[in-house]
Image 1: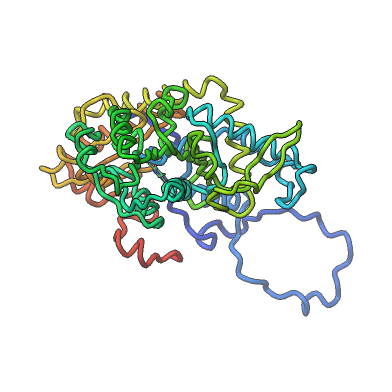
Image 2: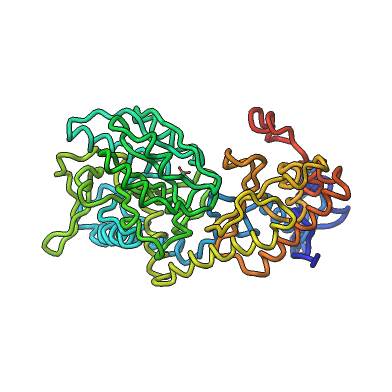
Length: 484
Ligand SMILES: *Cc1c(COP(=O)(O)O)cnc(C)c1O
């Protein structure tokens, strides 16, 4: 395959500074002494510590190379399915660091932070427009936090009607946070099996839905990267029994400007600003999981709410049916600024971003389905899921292939998720990858499939290039040794 970027794979072998340089090299030049030597010099000046002799270039390269040990979206393609690791334009970071925003204290009175409040007010409106729902809270700090907010809203809705509902339906393809959020709210989750097309069948939902069930949590597109095409029918079944429909919208990157979620008859939906709307994520940085609701659920949204009255923006706590506060102050404002800036700079092109994300995933699916088993051979959304079935005869697993990708300079995709697919290899290219980088990724995976047949031991021992090679998966996670 074509040479990539001057290196082959992630080069993570860097000697200590003590092992580098050569006698007599130096990093600085001193002017020649133009005063008489100090008489005490011999007594005052010792040999000095045993520092290595290095040139400036030795030193700069050493630290620059170390700085690249963390793989990130600015380093290369990061095809982690379900995570939407797309490139985030730097202009949004710049907007978030404008002094008026970055320096705004959360306790400023409303009259001194009209711009901040206007931004929040407008962002809520934009997100409502993008999803098709009526009202939005920006308070939740992440996707799972948005789910919890949504479940509290479900709870408040039934409480207001004097109903006790204890169960919630959750598809077997759901993100693990869905049942966890429902459980935190006291709901018992009932798993719904997806059909052979990888989506929910209305009759399976009808069989489980009853008047003790609060509703359903559907991820759409689901974690197989497939559009739940029966969502409208399913929503009808749930509503007919008095239940509510929660949509996990973390995968909105596939459908922005294309699907109006209110037409899918969704009642509550969360978004992940740190996936779809220009905040980098991974590593536990701040996120934001706004929750969008229909008009009749608006009264339950968390306080404070931003309102616009007589030309002024203010915060109100006067919402007697609100579920209360979900986060200190108003959520992670820095993330909100980036989303606002991203939406304004993209404008109507948001739709194009989704179209390209879907096109890129389908391109990868079509190009690789001859070498990797594709369990659901149909048009996908923003991600595609393969398995290691074709490599089984050579005793090569998904893990081996993911590790080998590092030798080719790519971050591995998501593996062994979703759980309903054995040996899953879940790839999400996102819209920000060019055809050139996607073709290199495809070529790397094809080369790996060939290696699996011809020299499987290469894959069993991968990765070879990184400093840390094959780790013990369990002890690396449970008892990490970070000093080596
Ligand atoms: C990422 C993701 C979540 C959870 O979001 P966090 O911000 O990590 O809490 C929930 N559902 C789906 C489908 C996701 O992809």
